[in-house]
Image 1 (spheres, rainbow, N blue to C red):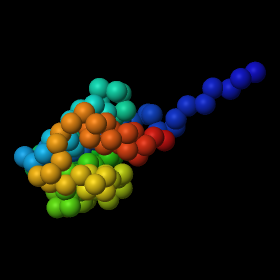
Image 2: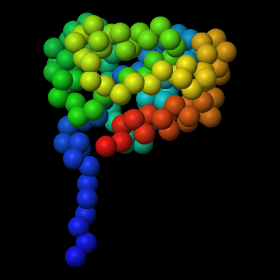
Image 3: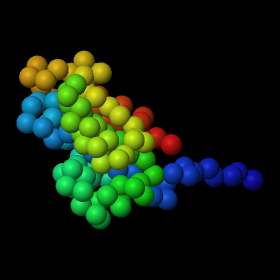
Image 4: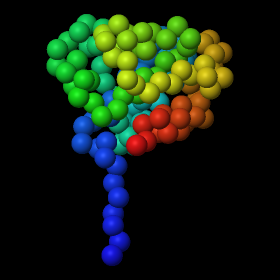
Length: 125
């Protein structure tokens, strides 16, 4: 008899907090998060709600099975925002690790897909 195995982290949502900054890499981070959500990998969530300490957003984030933070550049604004709110257990992707540089990297489908691919790996169980 074949036993079906499933991911044990599927009971609570996986949340994705992207940088949505005004630079090209902020656009890539944002669009990668939207693609990850569209693909059913996780749920894009409100970074401004974390910064504003909105109670419902904070509680939902506390109960997440996994969190992915995507920053566009080495300033690490999204990561810093979550850390200042008390969150320290999350997966992290900084697009500079993928050789994407602020002001030099177009928000092309190829660059977005590169970020999506790494994001999927980081959110896998």
